[in-house]
Amino acid sequence: MCCKGFLKVMMFIFNGVIFLAGAAVLGVGIWVVVDRVSLLGILENIEDAPPELAGLANIGYVLIGVGAFLTIMGFLGCCGAVKESKCMLLSFFSIVLIIFLVEVAAAIVLFVFQPLVQKALDEIGQKVVEGIEDNYGEDDGYTSVWNSTMSELKCCGYNNYTDFMNSQFVMMNVYPTMCCTNSSRPCNEDEAKREAVEGCLQALVSLIEDNAALLAGVALGIAALEIAAMVVSMILYKNVGK
Image 1 (cartoon, helix red, strand yellow):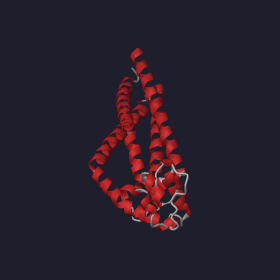
Image 2: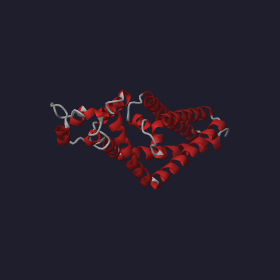
Image 3: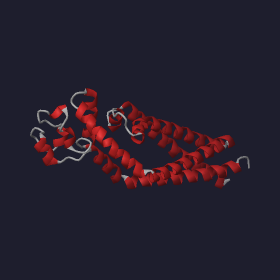
Image 4: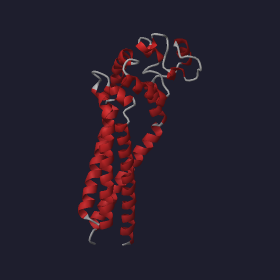
């Protein structure tokens, strides 16, 4: 009885964490969908973008789906543990098993197709630069997206300041202020070249690399939590009614 009570408490804690994590992911997804002023918004404005990256524009909806799914799963696990419902416990086990297998498959696919993602990045780079040349300073919505992205990531252009050289915005030798963050003088080509602010692609890659260890730790922690939750749910399932 004591062991069973301990397992119920552990099950409740596991699923409470999953429920809160799902709510957090759901909130981030809603924020991404509502606030389209980001690199995701830029992807939406690129014609003939590679499907590997064009799909990233819908990442907000994916996060909402995942968050809602995790929230429901956590609720099922908590209720199944408290009420000792075989149906809820079995449903919870099945859902966690499916998610775990999908995560493993996604990790394998990401590892195998990593060169294709890099190739897609190279292909999309030219299209982004063309979009800057044609639309930056002319299209208010497009300009606002880029300004917000550069301001948030502390970057300049997709590659660097040279992306703006043939745009309408710099016909009078005036570059975006984000390309000269440390200068009090007007941002012209000389100032932008002197400061050499990194491009937004590299800034995003650096952000991911800087947090790679944290992301890997979180992923491993989630996997361990899922395995533990499956084990505990099956033990409780077999002991219901005893």
